[in-house]
Length: 90
View 1 (cartoon, rainbow, N blue to C red):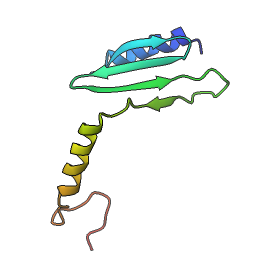
View 2: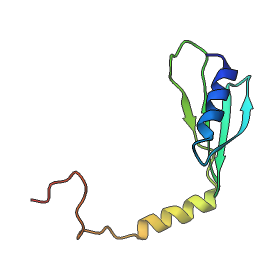
View 3: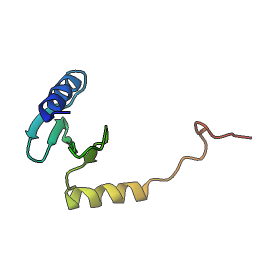
């Protein structure tokens, strides 16, 4: 599919989501998306006969923010007294 057609489809998709298509790069066939509060990702659209395969990428995380997130996750205690979806409680 032509890259401009992909970008048009992406714009239409964005109209139903909180994301905005903030940049397109025709040479790399890359589209960058952003939504508040600071959520972003990019999609690479290879043009080598891959069919409908696309590559999803996330920008490099800020090291300090990642370390803070990791520390918060490690400190959390799992809650054992609530039912888990899809798991038998017998």
